[in-house]
Image (cartoon, rainbow, N blue to C red; front, side, top):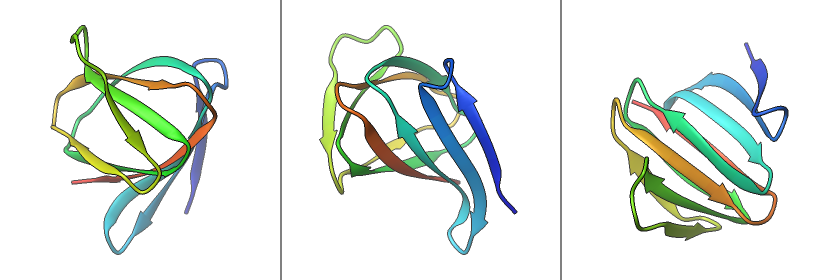
Amino acid sequence: MFKQYELFGGKVVAIDYSSAEGQSTIGVISPGVYKFGTDADERLTITSGEISYRKYKGDDWVRYGTQSTFTVGDGEIFELKAEVVSTFHLIRG
């Protein structure tokens, strides 16, 4: 089934679901900077807009546009920044 939730006062909205690829999330992120943590490896694909990534308190932001994919390691604390409303697909494991 699906599990829907909101983070950061509704500025990030996500739906979790199981797929053939594993535990997955689709989401929408509003403009802003948000801190996250992982409990498994995660592969994020930007499906619209643009999202920047950096390790928590890191110096350099790396920008990813539509159809770009990047990986976040298990146990990592990181930040995502959106300058426009953007969407993503995340697969764990």
